[in-house]
Length: 432
Image (cartoon, rainbow, N blue to C red; front, top):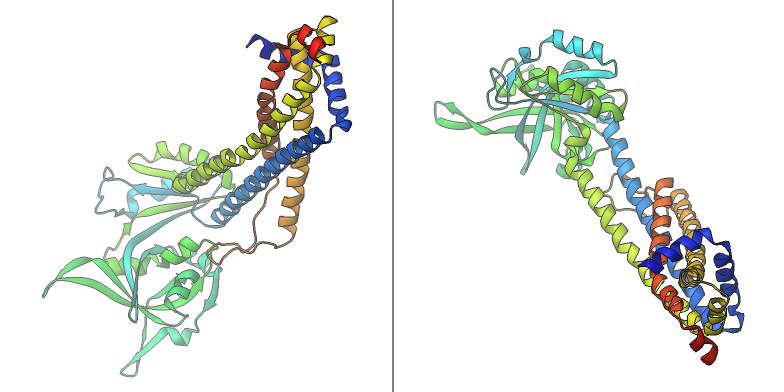
């Protein structure tokens, strides 16, 4: 352990050890085998570093794209009532549970809050012909509905939203459905759909499910496939009519101007709303971001084994170098060089090999990331929200991967360095 510590110390504090190590590395021209192994070692380290950089950049790109999609949505902070709130009934409370005066005071204290919308939502079964699926039926304010209509990609003509019964026009309640759901069910604007409540209601013929017919006003595209597949929208009065609750509210959604400050605003808002659960977009998608983080760590560890395998070649190179330089090592010791300084010489040689490999890998990784970002070489399946491969250039990844790879290489060089330090000068001169 003392030799290892001294070797690292002299590697930085003794310039001559680095110079001798560099000379040993350059003096292998007569040994083609050692030169070949050295090149393989450098290439192995470079391949491992470039692979880690590309994979980490792509995974960070997926996370960045996901955040951009969430940023464009109107749900940055969600306020949900708990059973402790007066009047709580099966997930619903009265509109007056969060008075307008409190909303105005919160918005005055936090100018970054752009929207504070109450909504009423329930789970329903959507039926189109013989096709059925479960969705969340959300009722929003007229202001919010107008904003949602800006995301509509296909809209029905007003004449298609009216039914004629006995010569009279009957205006059906209207809903907006997501593009993914429309594609799955084969629905187009103007179609009629039926919503069925899974909660039974009491009627003259015992318990019966509540159902109602609606017209599809349009198809919206939010850029979030999960939302498009499982959420349909209508005005709050339409949903309350379906639920038969005149002033029910199930949640409040907040939109902030600066997406990254949503967690700070949520922390400030929580004490003002006792009995309510305040969650920001990070908490609402915590399972997804936790999965991405776990995948990133797992891929980093797995790809780091490429560098570990490449470092075995460096160990072989330095071990052969120690056997080849027995006589030179003995002469250095006879001239007064300490064991830790001899170890530092070969540690410096390994550091040069590793540094060249790491530098080459970082450059190669940057080139590959640039090519993947500029050209659509890899096309993703339709299940992804973006068909091209997202790539980011995060300097922290380049630094972290390069330092980690260099540390792995340095620790791999300890064994041949210690072997050189333990060499007996007499044996080296006698048998060298």
